[in-house]
Image (cartoon, rainbow, N blue to C red; front, side, top):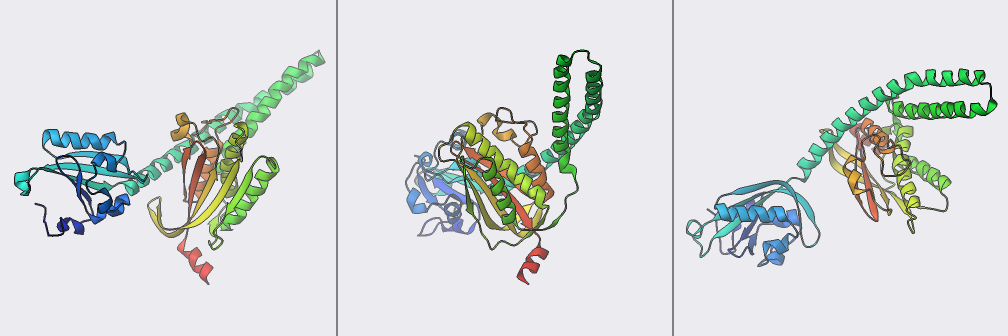
Amino acid sequence: MVQKSPNGFSGLEHIATAVILLNNQLEVTYANSSAEILFAFSANQIQGAHIHDVFVNCEILQMAVTNAIETQSPYREHEFALTTQRGHTTAVTCTATPISAAFNQTPEDMLILEFVQMDQQLRIAREERMLIQQQANSELLRNLAHEIRNPLGGLRGAAQLLEFELPQPSLKEYTQVIIKEADRLHSLMDRLLAPHRVPKYEPTNIHEVLERVRSLLLAESPNHIRVIRDYDTSLPELIGDREKLIQAVLNIARNAAQAMQQHQTEGASITFRTRAERQITLARKRYRVGIHLEIIDNGPGIPAGIKERIFYPLVSGREGGTGLGLALAQTFITQHHGMIDCDSQPGKTIFHILLPIESTQLKSSVQ
């Protein structure tokens, strides 16, 4: 039974679960402190509001409430997103439990909504899926590259021999096509095998990496894009392979630049933002601090049809793209025990890169 006090349902103030109580009209009569923290609102703000006005456009919550009332038994919905009127979105599991007036000793029936935050669990599960995906992708790419690379040498050699035997010089145009395409495929296979080079780990300044990428971008398209720097210069060095980190960031930023150029984005810009991220968990290992790098562009966004597959090899949203850039970027970041993720909508795409800093690095930076 709910414990009451003159101030309301104070017994619920001491539990970690977010709780919201509704009356017969599905209006909020109470929200505990955990609910206020979880959803970033105050109980006074939602007092008397209909639950569907508190959380907007959520059919899953509506289904849970309806089923609980109709069956007069607890009903649970797992792992769905709730968005408040202010736009705050949280992943939760919700249990709706009807309480009769007789049992609760109140004038009317009530409905208890219990919310458990799932953001961290979902993030960990997603990290594990991405790690498994990256390992599978890496193995697939390596095997594919070897299988294609082996006959390419023979193909190119045969075309060269054929070229010497052709009686008419005009026919050599066709053998040149074969040779050039074989060279192009050979170069592509070299890129596929590049991630398997043993990394050269050494103290690396993330801002030196970003400055190198910035200079390359501006050299490729000096008048098309603006590269904005928003750095936390107090960040310590990390132990990493400088060249692989440069390639990972360059692949992401170059994709953004090419997409904005293709769509003729007005005022095209790419922002490099660095911040410290504290108490992070990556690959089930806890780190006191890490580097949070954001690569932000104001381009057209990633097409909805490939948004969930952008880190898969050979998936590209750009005409003429190989679909290798982001797959390789993910491989390079994973080799640094980091994580890469993306949020995208038209007009704003953000790639989030988390790189851990080992505790020994922190000690050396303090000394």
